[in-house]
Amino acid sequence: MLIENSIALVSGANRGVGARFVTSLLERGAHKVYAAARDCAALAPGDSRIVPIALDITDSEQVAKAAGQASDVTLLINNAGINHVERAIHPREASAARAEMEVNYFGTLSMCRAFTPVLIRNRGAVVNMLSILARVALPAMGSLCASKAAALRMTECLRAELAAHDVRVLAVLPGAIDTDMSRDFPPPKLSVDEVVDAVYAALADGPDEVLVGAMARDIAAGLATDRLAVQTRFAGFL
Ligand SMILES: NC(=O)c1ccc[n+]([C@@H]2O[C@H](COP(=O)([O-])OP(=O)(O)OC[C@H]3O[C@@H](n4cnc5c(N)ncnc54)[C@H](OP(=O)(O)O)[C@@H]3O)[C@@H](O)[C@H]2O)c1
Image (cartoon, rainbow, N blue to C red; front, top):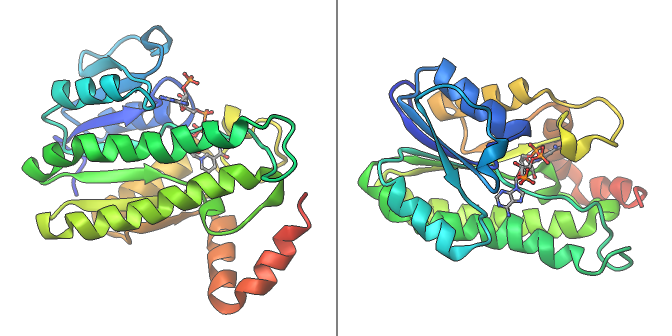
């Protein structure tokens, strides 16, 4: 898919990877970018090709309104996500698991459902920002892993449902990225540019499952050869 002349919507567009998606789409010649954020005041002002949209992806009314307003979208980037860095069984905050599921799984599902008619009509593409932790259990972020794993399986179902309509569905599985979300994690971390560039490369001529960075590629390769060994190694990260 070409970015040039595309019309994109990016959720969580006010910071981190989402903010870089917005600027890089315009650099690559996108016609228009709907920059969706919970707080539109947090969006960087400027380019007339940027259309701000107030959007909390867990709010079904706002999601439906966004799909109505952005009915010309050809590229949906479901970027919004949260990570409370909590264990599954012994969390400090019991509500974290539900919150992560609400945003990372149900919110992303809600966006996919609302935009499916738009994407079919416009022969578009969907990019779901997941995580390599959708493929492996890191106990220190147990509930995050579960929410991203659910979103990955949903993404695979969406891909199957939309294949007949020529709508591409990408699952993006990065390792740690240098944003607010991973502020407290040690390096190495991917830059936001490495992440968005990998997505554009995959949209142009790449796989539907996008492993971003050496960490993600090593984990995926390990899982393919000895799943239990990889899982045992990660079990130590409590
Ligand atoms: N950072 C990493 O290490 C890493 C690794 C793998 C995958 N990812 C994934 O990459 C994506 C982008 O993450 P990031 O690193 O850019 O994180 P970030 O800097 O923490 O930004 C997260 C964005 O999601 C938005 N958001 C959260 N809940 C939302 C909701 N209910 N509705 C709408 N927007 C919401 C935030 O908006 P507010 O400003 O309003 O909170 C913010 O714009 C996420 O899906 C994340 O899971 C990140």
